[in-house]
Each structure stands twice: as C-alpha cells, then as structure tokens.
Amino acid sequence: MQTLQVALGERSYPIHVGDGLLGSIGQWLPATKSARAIIVTNPTVASHHLTALHGGLTRAGISHDTVLVPDGEAHKDWRALNTIHSRLIELGAERSTMLMALGGGVVGDLAGFAAATYQRGMPLVQLPTTLLAQVDSSVGGKTAINHPLGKNMIGAFYQPCVVVIDTSTLSTLPQRQYVAGLAEVLKYGAACDVSMFSWLESSLELLLARDAQTVARSIAQSCRIKAAIVAGDERETGARAMLNFGHTFGHAIEAATDYDGSWLHGEAVAAGMVMAGELSVRVTGLQSGENLRLRELIKRAGLPIQGPRLETEHYLTLMARDKKVQEGAIRFVLLEALGKACLRSDVSMEDIVAVLAG
Ligand SMILES: NC(=O)c1ccc[n+]([C@@H]2O[C@H](COP(=O)([O-])OP(=O)(O)OC[C@H]3O[C@@H](n4cnc5c(N)ncnc54)[C@H](O)[C@@H]3O)[C@@H](O)[C@H]2O)c1
Ligand SMILES: [Zn+2]
Image (cartoon, rainbow, N blue to C red; front, top):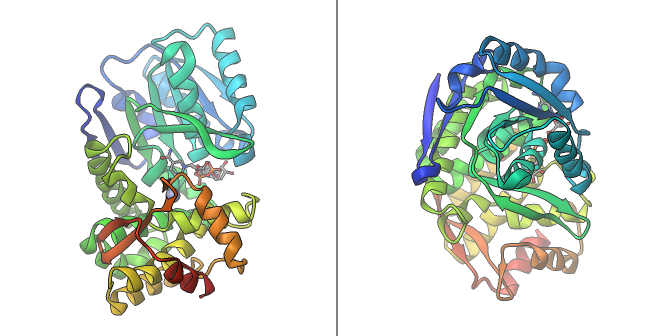
C-alpha cells in the first residue's frame, strides 16, 4: 500500500495504490465523506469489479446506487452524460453525494465531467481499472466528453477528492489494453525521469508478466511524476505539456483511423514517441544512442514503433488540428536527453516531413 499526494492547496487529494482496495473503500475516502455514493461504470467493468466495491461500501455503511453507461469511446458523449445527469436527478442525488467513477479512462472522463457539472459540482472519487487510467487519466482533473467535431472538446478541469487504485482490478484487463497502458508508463520515464527509464529497461519482463510488485511500483512512480507536474501546472500552461510526449503524432494516428479501435491510444502514443525521438535527434541533438534505447524499449514491450502509412499531407493536416497547436505553429514535445523533455515550436517543415517519410 502506498499513498501519494497531489498538492493543489485546498483542492489537494491523496492517491492510494494497493491490492484489493475496493473491498476496503471506506478506509480510503476522505473523513468528510458523505453517507451516500453513486457509482458510474459500464457492464464490462461491473461484471468483474462491482461486487467488490458494493461489499466495501456496505461494510463502510455507505448507501449506494449504480448507473451503467455503455462501454466504449463512442459513448463518451452527451447522450451518456445526459443519462448520468438524469439518473442523478431521479435518485435525488445531492451536492454532497459522492460520484464514483469505476472503470477506464472513458468512464473516468465522462463521470468526472458529470460530477463537475451536476449541481455545479459534487465530490468525485476516481476508481481506475485500466493501467492507462491508473497511471494517467484518473490523476490531474481533466474531464471531458467528445463532440462529433472533435475529441475531448467539451470538458472541465475538475479534481477528484481521492484516487483509489486497486491494482487487483488489472487481473481481468485484456493483455492488449494492459500493454497499451504501459506506453504511458514508458512515457513518464522517457520524458521526465531517466532513472525510471533505466529501471523500466531492467524490469520490462516482470512488467509484461504482470508481476504484482513491479506493476504497483510502476503505477506509483508514474503517479508521483504526474502528481508533481500537475501540482505545478494544473491547467497545462507550461510543464504539464511535457506529458504529451508522443501525443502530437499519436493523436494524428488515432484521428487518421477515426478512433475505430484499430489503434489503441497507447499504441498510437508508442509509435508517436518513436517519431518524436527521431525528430529530437534532428532538432535538439538527442544522442542517437539514447534514441535507440527509447525505440528498443518500446519494441520490447510489444508496442508499435511505426505509424500507419499515410500521405505526409494527411499527417500534417491532422497534426495541425491537435489542441497542442498554438498560434499556427505545431508545438512538439521533444527530448533533449532521455528523461528530459522540452517544448519546441520552431521545428522546420523539412525535419517534420523527413520523420513522417520514415
Ligand atoms: N483525463 C485525462 O487526463 C486522460 C488522459 C489519458 C486518456 N484519457 C482518456 O481515456 C480514455 C481511454 O481510456 P482507457 O484506455 O482506459 O479506455 P477504456 O476506458 O475504453 O477501457 C478500455 C476497455 O477496457 C475495459 N475495462 C476497463 N477496466 C477493465 C478491467 N479491469 N478488466 C477488464 N476490462 C476492463 C473497458 O470497459 C473498455 O472496454 C480516452 O477517452 C482518453 O481520451 C484521459
Ligand atoms: Zn496519453
């Protein structure tokens, strides 16, 4: 069991990481907790993990209802949001009622936005069940739904009051989803912490075999990095952008395939990190030996090291649409060295095109 802290003044909150925490949920909630909770989840996650959470809440004397939303990114939309709001009203949820998001990033983002907007904000408890949600989306307060014209376009910064990471939930996660989540873990090492990167190089086999201690350590280490960065830059005006390493290319890959699931987010980010590494060699002078280590680790994880073959023009159009574009110039998160990311908006078209051409 480990507890970390996201330091945001009066909006500070703990992140608890441990095995079987859903069953003892009462212990991990804030002292000021309400005696009532509404759980938002989907049928897939519910079938595996709702019983444990129900048991934990019952033991803690917290009454609870459950709202099911359909599974999938396609349902991170206003319809599902409306379903949650309607159920909250029908169930007579009050502003003090806790909203618990039990699931991956889709449930977390959607339920998080519902919590931010219901009666101008109710306490949000993040209970992430995918590796991606445990190391990334449940921490930091970004909540959103998709709009037909763009992903994550409608949302709010809204911090949870606690994040409870029950690592045992990963036992039911399909291997492809698990490995895609690993891409974000590798991202933290590559962009922010070279000693974590070295540790990942030597622990990758254990991580792939889901050795419990190694997985828990990688989650805690990832959350520690994210928590520190969010504490310094909650609204992504500076350092938080470093966490988008690999994401400018990655988002273009996802958009090109219309988020149809042929490329999971983490897979697209993995190929994106390789492309950003190549670009770094050209732009920042990242040593080619370090670039090779990045590429090798991604490859060893079983993640893609090459994006889909697209026309260069297509990539450029998609990247220009990304939220990371500021005043017309595409901003890239590049590496000066392993563990040391930087933001650059002065990258020449020639270098971008060379990297896209592979
Ligand atoms: N808010 C943020 O800061 C942030 C950061 C990164 C990504 N995101 C968002 O996160 C979303 C992606 O999240 P994701 O990768 O977790 O996808 P997801 O939520 O769709 O989960 C992937 C699949 O795994 C299933 N699942 C979840 N937990 C399971 C478990 N323990 N056992 C078996 N199956 C399980 C889900 O039902 C789903 O089918 C995207 O919408 C992305 O925009 C948000
Ligand atoms: Zn990501």
